[in-house]
Image 1 (cartoon, rainbow, N blue to C red):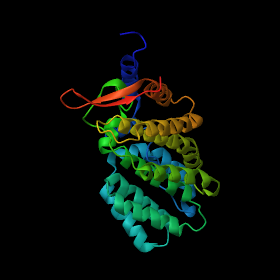
Image 2: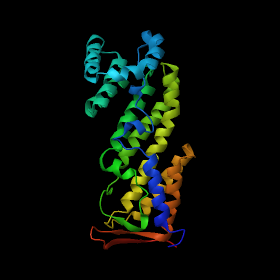
Image 3: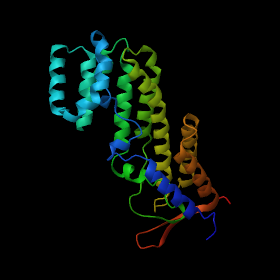
Length: 283
């Protein structure tokens, strides 16, 4: 085997990806944290105490009672049902608890009530983050850590066989709206900087995730006819990732190996080790 064998090089990329890419099960390594872990939004009258709340949040997390917080937010909504901040805070807490449907409903109400878009940036960011976290759960979260895989010897197993564009377009759109709404934001400077720095990163990571899933889909054992098309679509998404973050090492590696796939082709094997599919390269 020569030094340029894609198996050896891609295996190295896989090891690199497994060290750098986040699984939904280990939120401490996540590329970005939920804004709820940083601070809760406050209404304009409470803006003076926002920075103090932000700084004390880390200590408060030790004794943080999520259920009690949810009840408190519900009580605040009963007292001020038209206050978008209360609905946002409840949405964040519900999202942390795993109640995604009710969280989405509360975020939606928060956006409707935020007529001046003073908190829209934070709300859109939270919605985008929630959808992204859903995206990296389950099979998609397992595969993403080794999405570059062994291109020339892919086997059946934890393989993505379907890629729904909407799953990726929704979080990307929400992060873009978060950026667009920043000029209206009426919140602590730390929140502004957090969104300004992390929303573009979230977009880059989502594009990378989309690309890696398309490539993994192309390596399933079923021959579905659009393998080449999907790899080329992945390359466009990788370009967008690198346009945002030129130092995105995983995307850089993925570009290299997607080119090898198109040039040299690849195979997929069934559970018994027999070749199930072979895609011809252009070389």
